[in-house]
Length: 285
Image (cartoon, rainbow, N blue to C red; front, side):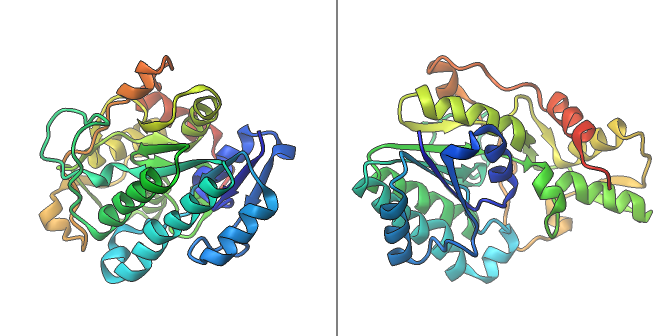
């Protein structure tokens, strides 16, 4: 298979590139390929004629989406529409990544693929609209919802990921306050990449949840980061209300990988195991 990979220098795409044969993937960064430009999308897809388009491009700064709804919709919805149309015209499969934030968090057991979405934020709404674009316009598609993603490329990017932000704040010696009333599943970008590629090659098209197993609050996630790194910063829990972020987050957004298991694929490891591997693998800082 020949792959076209968007957002190629991002956190997840970097790990996907490690899995795919280099001579079988065309990696395109945002600077090279703006998915919001419909004509450019059509031209490049026609030029490369991939068997599969893997879209990791996204505007995923959740609070910034509240201030920039036009940009959120352009990247997360309209850009995805362009990719879906181009994929369908060239008979390519489209792999698109979505989010746990399409749910409102009122359910207290893990969400399955057939649960009804009800996003609470501009980010969640824009990602759900992107899902609809894929389902409507790309006959051959995989929509993959994931949760709490962190990866080595994210540790090098501006702003980093949650793990790196926690470690940076610990080094600064400042008090750290983390919300304890939002429950999720931290997910390793490397493990997601390792599981996505076999899925693309062998699974039926459709919607899949793909996260590490287990659940925790963001506060418990931070506790485990510090336990594994033998750090003892001034860490304490806070509430979503006290944190006062611009975007409303679901209080519970754990995903059940049910469709993955039904398709015959093994489930992911528990999230603490994946986190321990990430911390061992981190590049020297």
